[in-house]
Amino acid sequence: MGFLDSLSGQITNAGKDIKKKAADTAETMRLQNEIRANQTKIDKFCEELGKRVYEDIKDNPDEKYAYYVDNIMKLQERIEDDQRSLQGLKSVRVCPECGASVDGDSAFCTCCGTKLN
Ligand SMILES: [Zn+2]
Image 1 (tube, helix red, strand yellow):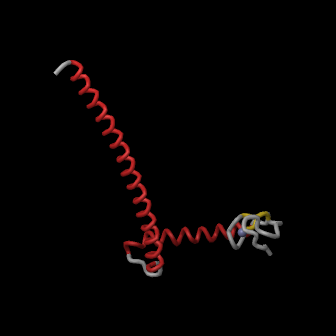
Image 2: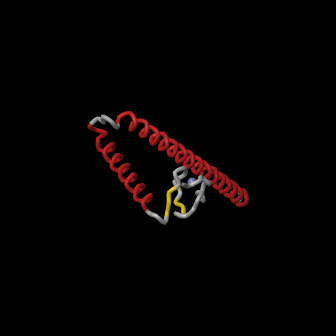
Image 3: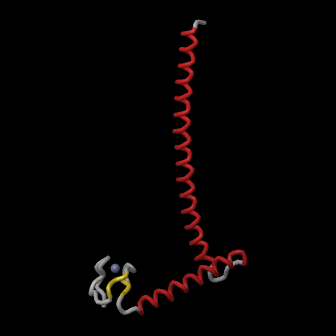
């Protein structure tokens, strides 16, 4: 085989390598995106499952769930305390419809338009 034939062969092989790398890169990105999207879906299902299980067991949790139920209940009490504290602040009101913080003198919610008493 002559020098030019050999060079031509090398260039062809380099081109094939570049095409293969580009295809592999595209496939890698596609697979990584698919994995990420499916992991996000799993996380959402787990969250929904957790909420449903919580509603089913919260009144009489099995020992293995007690830690989670206890923490959720404590955090919910904390939220309710904070919401009461918010309502006690005179210069700011909390819209009962959407939960937005609204100026205490406003007659209507600036976020959703609900009439405030
Ligand atoms: Zn509102």
